[in-house]
Image 1 (tube, rainbow, N blue to C red):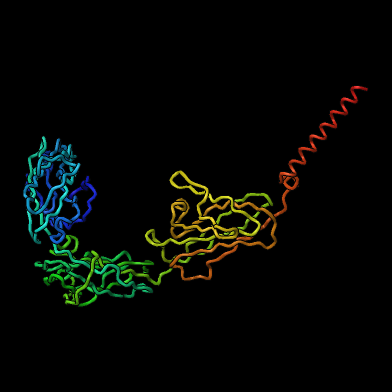
Image 2: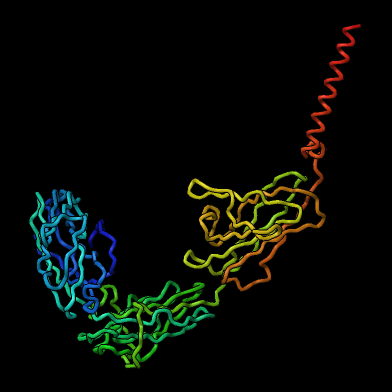
Length: 491
């Protein structure tokens, strides 16, 4: 089995389809225990550059990679000064070339300096970016060749057949979602497609279906291959030649089941492609009746996917974490407020985590809610109310709660609250919320105020007028004292 290959690549504007089969260049095999350095390519045998109907309007595709791997050998040396020369001149008429910053080019020939590759390791570059051309047909193709040399390893060569794909098949986008699906229960969606191009699908079509964690596909059709025995992914092939301008649906719906104990939400997505190329990890063939395609009225689909959202009956019950504001009038105290996640389901980062809202007791003022994020922080972790007496809104999905957020536990933060005056019976509130909380009875708790009178010094000197009077009194006493001393001295 190959060791991981480090990949250096430019971001691709278009995610191209890549065949699942890999071609390994012919090279001498290292005998067991030999120190001979042997390289091999791990390139795709075929690669779809763009779809014919996209033509010159296709987005640049920079995802074609040329990985080089060094065969592991006991005590073997690294491959030194590895260089790969990629010749893309065979793409004339089926693709235009846009030079990348990775590998210098002379015309259609690119030279990539891979450097020293360690024994059992590898490297990968994406040497060129591909642009479409008008006037091509699905299946048009050319060949890219490449040669790898090293100071201490035999030269290897390889080729990849670069094809024009298509036509582009579209799906309806967001489908009507399903809510209230209990763990162990099933639901279904009928996959639909449209071929709104001028090309028919000469080699049939393929359907790729994926479901999120906590959901499995439960209708296993004989023309579909699945990734495992409890599959979350399926690939189905149809011999139907989808006509230009036509639309179709599957003859039976795709059936999926929420797996106990179940997630709060889930999703089913599907895409269509032509030509069909089965992913290598989809090895389990279904045994049920085959799916077929049924022609329908033309559809103006313009999305690459069909998507179905799922909301289950599983809940994530939040209840408030509260405390008493206790101290003397004039004190600023820290009060830890927030929420506790009682489950049983857990809200994930890709779902709405919810919030808690705090209304402080009458007679108090929140002076700050300090937080820390990545060794930095700020004064206000929660959004402050626009009017006095309003609620502080604390969205626990924000970065400001990153340091105190705990999945399946307590998320709470210190409120710095100043006690301004005694108000008998005063209470604030903490209210929790998330869209998956179906137990509202425990969503609100009170924040009691237990205020004691201010100490005498604070009563005397707690206001500017008191300080002024005190200063005047001290000054007066000092003047009287000095006058008496002068009188005593004079006599």
